[in-house]
Image (cartoon, rainbow, N blue to C red):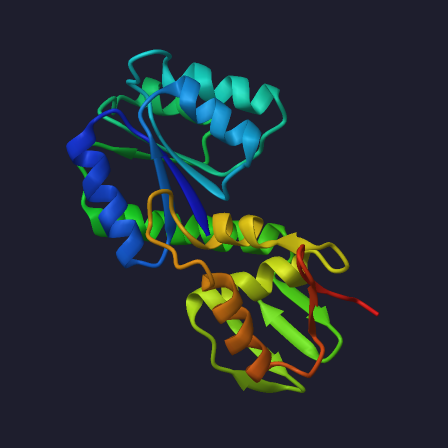
Length: 219
């Protein structure tokens, strides 16, 4: 699950990034509204954590502009503005949740997990391709009814492929889903995950498109 953190307080942002990575989220951080908008337009994340007091644009205006552009990415507002009026304004602008500063990191993580479950449910919590069943909300994969033990990154990789049957996913696209900016990634990381996945899935379930990427075919 790819999270975009929009926060101009470096110390706070660094703490959030560390906490999210420890909880197996892939997180990218920007400190301005302009940068956030460019990131979303280039490759939309799965979730956004948005501070309102940004140096270049108010977070509420940024959220409204993203909604006007038809980006419906679940967004959690993180801000020192904690009045009822501010909360209502944020929710009316399209926010899905609101957490006032200061906050406990455990509460932030719990709210993100709730949003993650909502995203999984909205995009179909159960995906079936051939004899493989993936339950997005419970992170369970079954082959012929038997559960398969996957790491979180293996699960995320399989989910991307099964959500996009017959569509080639390049290595770069998959890396962007699995890893954060600046995270040290070995040149064959995706290949290694694919190798481990193939050992746990039916033969031929994941096909290699040489020089391009990988695909899970529906037929």
